[in-house]
Amino acid sequence: MTTVSSLPPKQGRNVELALLLLAVGIVVLAYLNVGLAAQGSFPPGLLAHGTGLLVISLAFHLLLRWRASYADPLMLPIVTLLNGLGLVMIHRLDIAAGKDVTEGLALKQLTWSALAVAIAAAVLFFLRDHRTLRRYTFTAAAVGFGLLLLPLVPGLGRQVYGSRIWIGLGPFSFQPGEIAKIVLAIFFAGYLVQTRDVLSLAGRKILGFTLPRARDLGPILVAWIASLGVLVFEKDLGSSLLFFGLFVAMLYVATERISWIAIGLLLFCGGAYVAFLLFGHVQQRVLLWLDTFSAQALAVSDQLARGLMGMANGGLLGTGLGRGRPDLTYFAESDFIIPSFGEEIGLFGVFALFMLYLLLVERGMRTALGVRDGFGKLLAAGLSFSLALQCFVVVGGVTRVIPLTGLTMPFLSYGGSSLLANWSLIALLLRISDHARRPLPEAEETGPARAAEATEVVKVR
Image 1 (cartoon, one colour):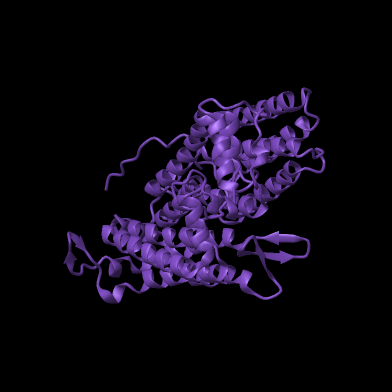
Image 2: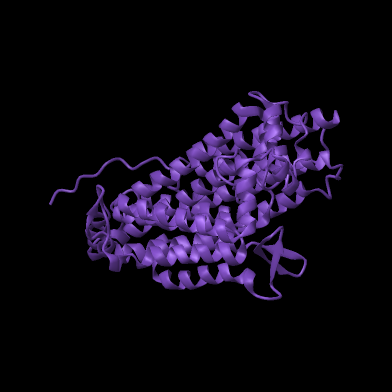
């Protein structure tokens, strides 16, 4: 037998290092610009924040050189830039609130960033092969649904602004749903790899769609009921949409049947309508969405109206970093950080941020296409889609494309839960991309194991 091999792909670590230094440089310049524009002086925390971001990003880069040398070279610079720009805007809001550098939210966010990178590094270090996660498919299901139920535990869960999605641990609070989305993605990937053949079986053809058999509708109905449970008991519209959308998207990737998308949309629309009829907080969200500037809506909340007016004030080019008034909007550092950026860097600047997210998701989907096992394909696609869906839900809410949901923008918004979860998500994608880009043949992929993997790839395709 003749073995045909190609030249091994470049690792790209030097490219990653150059882009990483560029990303940190952009963040430092933005930080300097905020200080000069808002205070007219050199910002006192520039060295600490710039050095801190550089150290944690370089440490992660060195770990990639050591443990995942073929990992995607663009993900880390993009995430570092987004995380750093989020720090800049949070610092800018600290200045508007008159907070000292040592007491503001920006320093806390930098601390959370360091902890998030440390946890992501631990994931990358101890997880040598993403395929080992498949062994814990149903354990991940138990952990994921357990995390979703934690806020309902008396004495542990906390209700904040109508939504019961937080747990309190002494002076600290945490949002377990952020971790649950990753754990559930692992469960969905493992489950769908095992059952995709059954779920792909043809049923009746109605209106041009080949619908699945009635006996195979169980998984999507369970996911639908679980998402409604989150909506009803925790009053969390955003997480409900995220979990159900994640499962439907991974179901489509596994089976390549559009009928699952149609069924998912019908179930979601039906559930949303029933929730609208039964729950007052959903009716308020719809009112704010459809008639934001009415007297009735403003009596409920003027947060969305303030955000829209702030973005309108920014126009195409923005007022300039440090020269707007994003602090006039409630929760400008978390839920409404996109309007904060929109006012000061304008529509063009916000589109540049969106392009960074688009490129990050594209690299994740490229990883899903390149990896050679079915579980890895589904997991990479699911993690990438969850990131894309969360961005859409957040941006759609603050721009009145869809009702507000209360989710935060990954890497930009203030909050430790979101940073910890999303950096760990990126670590998983980097581990999968290292496996996808690593040249063949490898010692551990020869023999029966390699043949079994090749068979699995054929099935996925």
